[in-house]
Length: 94
Image (cartoon, rainbow, N blue to C red; front, side, top):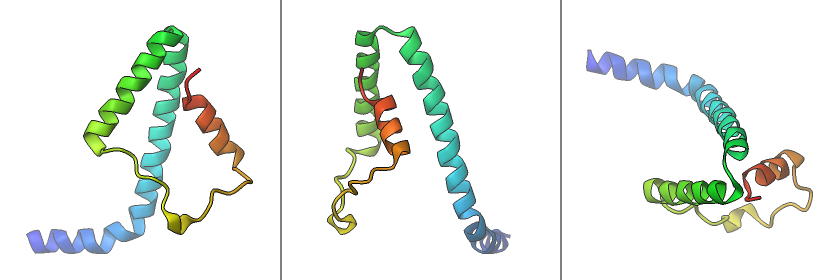
């Protein structure tokens, strides 16, 4: 039975992997954006900044510090995607 299940996972998972990863990323962003909107309305700027700092510290302890940009990606594009700019502005401090 374990071999059968492993075979099913190995044969069925790869075609759906991109779907699951994209769906998880999409849902995570929606949940984060809603939480951020509520926090910005409910907290004072100082409280929001403290919560933001706490979240960064917790993420660092759980997952390690975010890596630097790999040199293989080259220089950042001067034509930034406006969606990325909007995300940066939403998550940046006030």
